[in-house]
Length: 62
Image (tube, rainbow, N blue to C red; front, top):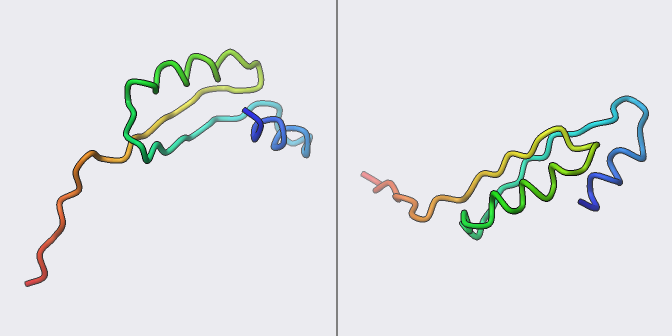
């Protein structure tokens, strides 16, 4: 939320922003709550939240 104010106050080129959040904690149960709270702001066009995979398959060196 604080970042959006800084981005929008330093330019006249745009008045709305799209937020992209990478969630390293994989706390998907919080995504919709976070999105709903952020999207209430007039200057936020949309919010995209992507979660880190819970498991990452490591490729074997052959």
